[in-house]
Length: 92
Image 1 (cartoon, rainbow, N blue to C red):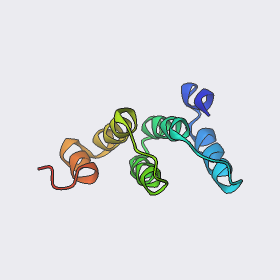
Image 2 (cartoon, rainbow, N blue to C red):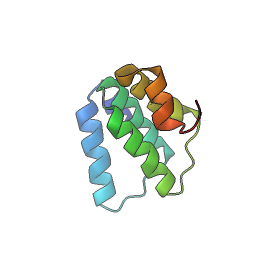
Image 3 (cartoon, one colour):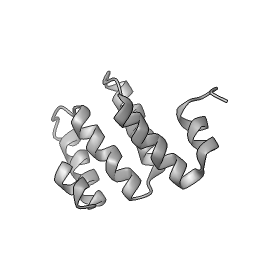
Image 4 (cartoon, helix red, strand yellow):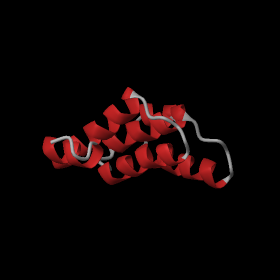
């Protein structure tokens, strides 16, 4: 999946993530980091927020890279204030 992210084939990377999830494979932080990285390239901020939430529901603690990618994705699409509103409720 990282190769898909690096060559900006974001749709392929997200399809691969979905397929892994359906097959019952264990998704880890690296899988989510790759998927979040491609969300920014595809301007898919809603999916970035969903993936971050999915990590938390799976008891995977997002690190600075995960949160930073999601914040960047939302900020690029919706602006700074909305990025903080979506990802850091009550921060302002």
